[in-house]
Image (spheres, helix red, strand yellow):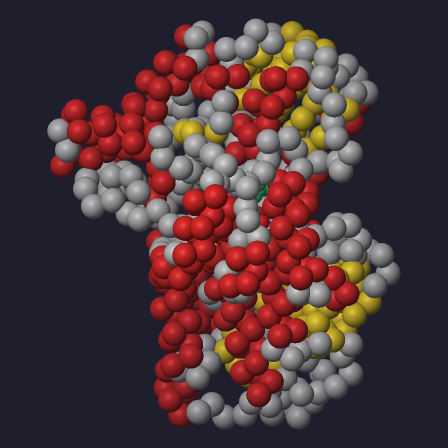
Length: 549
Ligand SMILES: Cc1cc2nc3c(=O)[nH]c(=O)nc-3n(C[C@H](O)[C@H](O)[C@H](O)COP(=O)(O)OP(=O)(O)OC[C@H]3O[C@@H](n4cnc5c(N)ncnc54)[C@H](O)[C@@H]3O)c2cc1C
């Protein structure tokens, strides 16, 4: 391998994906450094410290599984942990594996330029850090660039305003305050019940109601802790082989296989079940048959009407324009109940749009409301947001944001042609589901690939454009079909004005990824171009690999 680089592997992002990538790279014998924009470890769980922030994935299925000792020594307190515990966990992992000395905080990467003659990347960060690296791995997250809607006057507001994804580390005091929460996606619905309990008044500005169902969280009992340890291997087996990386197993019946009474009882069981079970273990035709989907939606609508006392508010909270599973379904604790409190009100901004933010509050067509605090729970520039803002320049100075002007194209959601030695686990074309499981699969594959490159005496690796085109076509084709999320969701970029409407996840899920990784290995990396930089020589492929290409 050519010399002259400061590190072999530069990881960007200290979230759950980047931490694991750092661990794996160092473990494989590479010199490695991680740059993180924030001042601490955790990624999502560092930035999203708003009250109520928590997992929708079961804690023990979300945490790392690579070390049995780590699993045994960390006892999650809740089935769905809250942010403080998750942040503590990720800090524990970093210290336990002595990774902190490889991390530089407060280092936001602003430029990463590929140098063709040496086959290395020159990376610069806003704090003045400059690093030359052989391999660049951007674990910069899919939900790491907060989005603010373009509402006039936002800068004029004289009270406090916060985005849920940029929450301050000093607690925000809602007691006795007049609070507005704008947005009712997964973050807004977690925050609302907590604010409702404390604030003098809470006004929730809702554009799109979501099909919310209960999270059904609970503390983990001592017996359950013991069982988790006993059943660790079986749990790993299920998680590692399940399509979405969850423990919840698929159901074996379709909606109308059951008579009405049985169906009702099944829906009740779903309603009482934990987290994503409602999506992963519901009737098999839920996401395929619109009539079946409507049946489940009718059940949820009845539940909302039975919880929310004011009929007009209840109707506003029931989605009318999209099916269950078209958007990412949020899971809630006390969300609908919060609207029964006398200090909580709901504004439907489709009917009465926000016209402007003023120095003292928010104006809609219905008039002005005064606030002390405005919270923007308005989501993120999903999938590509961080990568296209990092100043990444590949071969011939091509900007990643130009390369992806029509939406992302990737191979396995880990590489894109024209950007050698650059990888982005947990980025666009990651699978839907329990994130760390899928991102971890990608990190494992990337690390094995780096080892392959090193041990075979290569300097650069870059996906073949044909392989990328084939994978991206698969993603785009599958995205058109159920059970994909719908085009009105942020998974297609629909929440960002001007963003190309292209699928940002991998609609084939983990099974497709596993199959393709196997193929790559069987064909001796034929999907990639491998070369020795400096020599100007592209070594001939092994015969089998050449044929496979
Ligand atoms: C509120 C919330 C709840 C969620 N709940 C779940 C859940 O229950 N289950 C689930 O599976 N997923 C959940 N997610 C998705 C979550 O993002 C992933 O689970 C996971 O945290 C992603 O980890 P990551 O390491 O890939 O990215 P992140 O955790 O987003 O970390 C990326 C890091 O990269 C850094 N970074 C970005 N750009 C730069 C740059 N240019 N220079 C330096 N550093 C940079 C960021 O500061 C950030 O720290 C949730 C997301 C949110 C926002």
